[in-house]
Image 1 (cartoon, rainbow, N blue to C red):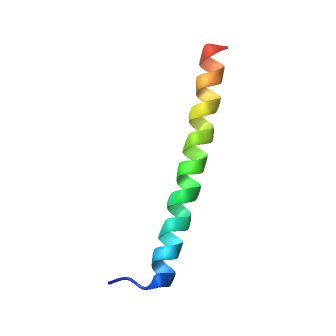
Image 2: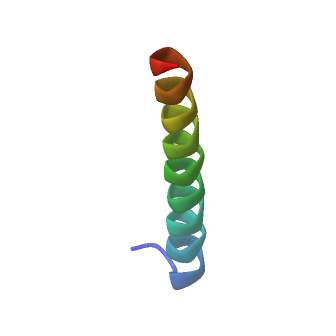
Length: 34
């Protein structure tokens, strides 16, 4: 089992990664559609 601190860190990184990917996807979509 992992510690709560490690789980929180993993969750934070997953959240940040999803946020960045979402922004990049949105930016690419807008640039492609013009």
